Image 1 (cartoon, helix red, strand yellow):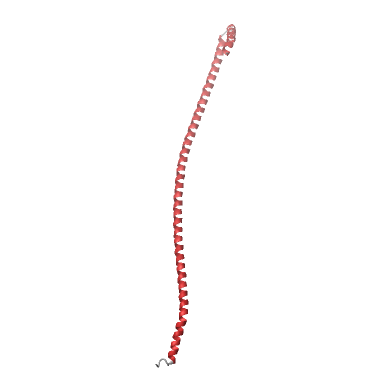
Image 2: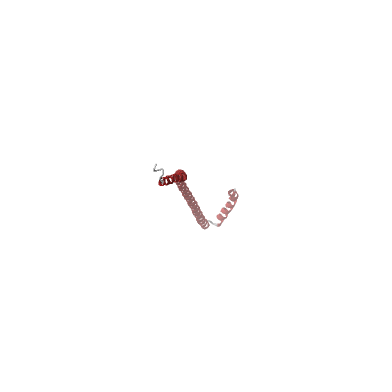
Length: 162
């Protein structure tokens, strides 16, 4: 029993008991702090995972929207090209029609001018022939025959006027 009467033993035992008694609440608070910290870290990890999933979902959505926009743009470009080709064909047809109309108008003007020229030549030929006939008649007829022809022409005038 020498150990029980030794004061160093009692001091060591008291020290161990104090340390154990002091360590229990400290261990509980340390454990609680570590558990709270671990829960906080788990919550942050879970939030980061959710944010990552949301970001991936948004990325996928925007990539789909981009693909849809590209497809729509290609469709619009194809429609614009088709419309441009159609307009080109229409413009070529319109140009051909306009050229044909202008050509026809020019031919009609040429024909009209030609007809006017032929009429003018006929009129001039008639005038020249009449002047020549008049000179021939005046030079070859005597005054009595002239008077008889004039009376005959005056008599036929009402019949020719109808």
